[in-house]
Image (cartoon, rainbow, N blue to C red; front, side, top):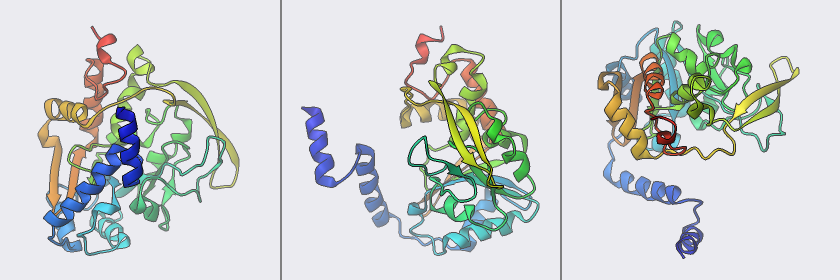
Length: 298
């Protein structure tokens, strides 16, 4: 009966999930509550207070749909941050490719990203390069780009030590999120299961099968990438389980949750967060509710 009611609600409101319906009405409410405009100058000054400055290395997660009080364009946003960090700094963003199926060929230079409108605009900037990884590709520009991206096609999982996500911990990077809520930390938290996969059966259980993908590199050469995938694994976490780990186990001085008008802006130190989540994982503290860690950690 419950499933029938949910199906009817989805049909009436033309949504695919309960989360999508909640997000829709939360957005409508927030647009009424938060009306203060955000200038480009105000946004950059706010980032300075969060420690972003000339020479900073930053990884940016974003949702352009939450920038409705921002008075600039996507290009203004990217250009302003590039100007803030200068040529000494590096910007990276997610560039996981938009592919129709596992048989689709990932063209590193041309395939759009699922990382959002800001990430897709950034991907097309002159000088931006992209890692050759068909599940969780990353794009970047700056002096640390080659270090971040050059070995991703050799990764056994999307977030292991050869991945850009783990390497953020080696370049004193800050991970920023814009408009993704106050509980969002980012994809780098998955480094824990990739690093601990060979240490503990719980983390190995999160990777279900070996998948081989094809991709074209920047030279147009057709290549293959073998990846340990989480496809088919019931891996779940909730906002509550995620927030419980962050609030209880993270140093609040290393993780800042802020807001400009409606726009949530979070920043945390990549080296601290990645190594902390690995440390917690070794002690059986994870963000996941499924698989149940209590069955593996005694």
